[in-house]
Image 1 (cartoon, rainbow, N blue to C red):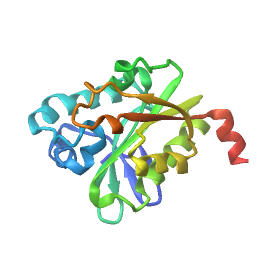
Image 2 (image 1 turned 120 degrees about the vertical axis):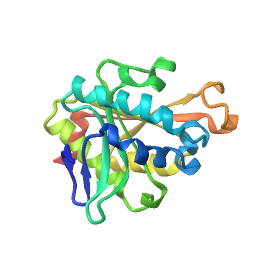
Image 3 (image 1 turned 90 degrees about the vertical axis):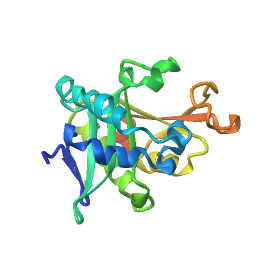
Amino acid sequence: MKTFLETPRLQLGYFTEADANRLWELNRDPAVMRYINGGIPLDYDTIKNETIPHYLTYYKKYQHYGLWPAIEKFSGEFIGWFLFLPTVESTFAFKLNLAEPNEIEIGYRLKKSAWGKGYATEGAQAIVKKAFTEWGVERIVAWALAANTASRRVLEKTGLKFDRELSIPTHLIPQLPPEELTIFKYALNQQDFSLSSQ
């Protein structure tokens, strides 16, 4: 696999059409999809015919932005993906009118077997460092449901700070109870990153 970015334990590469099956295995786990769509598995045909082709367009459009499959170096196992995209590309941000031209969203989705091992933090920290020191990014943002404490901890360990609280309309994720539809926005500016790195 062609490498986009490496960390001590992870290799981030590029999706290809051959990745439909392993992406399907990730997205069919209700636990993985719990805070994405209420736990509904995604079907294989949608992933093969829509999701993967959509991911591939980012590689042609951007040099440093996209979705990258994450491989655990020691085992060679696919453990999930990392996302780094302008918020104008985010369906979620668009639906809630949250997209801003200067904001780049960071995100991740890992298999349950990879949870609790620090992979999400390791990958996200590497992306943030590259973004601010080499790619000229000015502001990184992320969203996490308030109930998704594990994802929020990753964002905080990555250096992002709480920015504001939002409510998601029930029709966007009708499978979640109303009390779980509060979402937190996190953000980090290049200047603040530079100060914290000194």
